[in-house]
Image 1 (cartoon, helix red, strand yellow):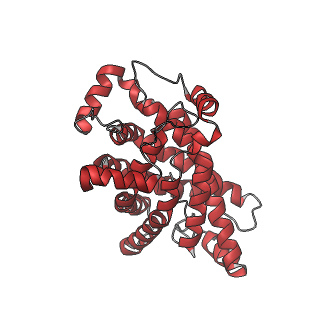
Image 2 (tube, helix red, strand yellow):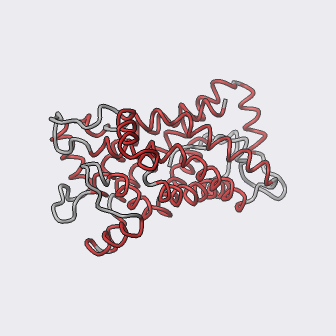
Image 3 (cartoon, helix red, strand yellow):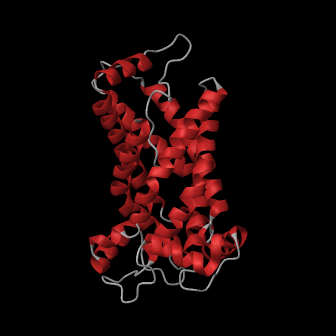
Length: 311
């Protein structure tokens, strides 16, 4: 049931956060010599004016399709790793989250490749005159025919470098925040507290790995026009810093942070509501038992409490 709830919650998170993600990608990969957008809000305005509101949802098919597998991997690996490690400690929370992040990268990388290519297609055009890709599946199929598996997995190393510590920080931050905020079943503010913990954990996770995300986006957008600009991660870092300085690693950060809180909040709220509806009175009894502080440990048990699955 946690898996089903996670999938529904993840879908809610994608719907809320995808417009911000489109803005983030556009800002991260735009040319430094001829920038199209001056900042986050100008990018929002330009996309809506030039491409209509639907332009903000370009590439949404890919993350929506990949949610089932990603949630299954994240929840399954994190839960099994915590059971294997035995003790519920902050270190184990980080390790379990890192393991989940590393393994789900296998699905996440091609999914985000298709998303990025779709988001960049038809930039500045309300109706694209020449669509290279019909949809996310067509995008991956075309890349596979032209470049094979290596092309479909373009950006895999940078995805692993981002997701492994990113999910570790997320689960660690969530564990610490739920302990700090407290959880009492009779507390009328219990759900807002959990939403706050999820949203802030998402922000902490993004801040910890954002420079890597900039490189990943640039590598995955590279070659969309047929010619490749970067020879790899090191070459991408070198060219980006030489042309734009170290501030390049903060491009799109504002839209990312604006997206991080509501996405994780929406995901967690949906997960909670689905579980409450499905389990009824049993869910309330289980939550009360899990929220009761133990003598040496005064926080929620992550395995009993559903976790948000989207960063």
